[in-house]
Amino acid sequence: MKHRIWIFALVLPLLSACGAKPPETSPELPPMVRQELLFLQQGFRWYGVEGTYTVYFAPAGEEQELLLEDPEGLFWAEAFTCTWDEERDWYAFSNLFEPVLTQNPTWAREADGETAAFQAAAVCTAELSADMDLGTPLRFDVPPGPVVYDRRWGGGKEAPDRMLFCLYLYQDPRLGFTAEIEYPQYAEYLVDFPNPEKVNERIREAFFYGYYDEDALHPEQRTRGAIVRNCAVTRADETCLSLRISEDNVFMNAPHPNSWYTGLTIDLETGEVLTLRDILGPDRTVEDLLDSGAFRCEQIWDESLNREGAERLQIKEAGPYIRLDAAEDFYLTKDSLGLIGQTGRYSFYMEAPLSSLGLEAWAS
Image 1 (cartoon, rainbow, N blue to C red):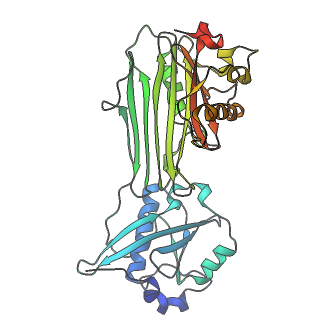
Image 2 (tube, rainbow, N blue to C red; image 1 turned 90 degrees about the horizontal axis):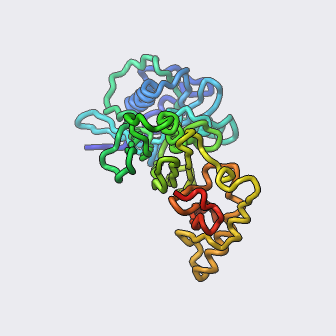
Image 3 (cartoon, helix red, strand yellow; image 1 turned 135 degrees about the vertical axis):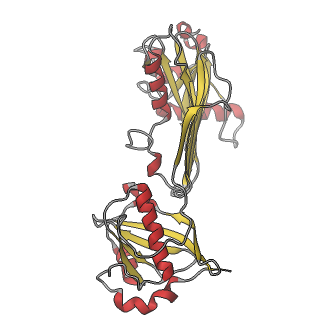
């Protein structure tokens, strides 16, 4: 028989010992509290969380809410559900929200009125570190940590000649985060292909980007979310590689799922990434391209207008988002130029024949 035991019923007798000065963890703590501390400690050890934290327990509800104060005086809000199997004397943890394990500073907060109110209402506090002896046997199954897979992908779509697809898969059941990235690479055995290692590294950089000021993707700093990235190889010949990369993601702290496109075009003779200015030359502008009337959108987001009117409006709105000195806002096909734009929060792409833009020299 399984029971959800509310913490306040167990720890009210300890309130006299749980005042402003946090007591040391002791054998007098109720069994469920000790198992919860053990569970937190297992996470500290698995994810390398260092230092001594103070753990504040809120009166239990549907979830057990906690506040962890780190050695720097910052606070981390946590929550999970803990149930107890009376017959087996075994505990189970679910609905885990443990951002402290990511050590991502965006989840930490400084002391304020809310943290002070949580501390004042806490029914018990305890000190916790990864190497502390809690003096109690573990009575729960420890969830697995992250698993990383990154190798040639035999189950993906067919790759162009001389290329193969790789799959990077990061799964962390405890933090509830998954990253799935399918990306192309040139075969290592090529001997007549200049700079294959450099080109492959440029491709990886285009897929493993981070958000905001991050230098690269750091999946170990993510919780409760999913990222999926893949691409269409729009051109792959002896001189040029071009990709249209797509991303879909969802995070618990985001108001909605997100989707967008980015481009990548590489000069295979030099291994360098090209910008839109490299394609257009020094004198052409984005306005010149869009005013040509040659572009057609793959997807129209505004369904309140007829397609022709909506397409013109969408292309006009995309103009300010397309940058001449960026590599991410365009791609090539064998006979077309693709531009990646945005209308509102929606990303889209549009294509025009190179011959209609006076760019026949870039046709393959």
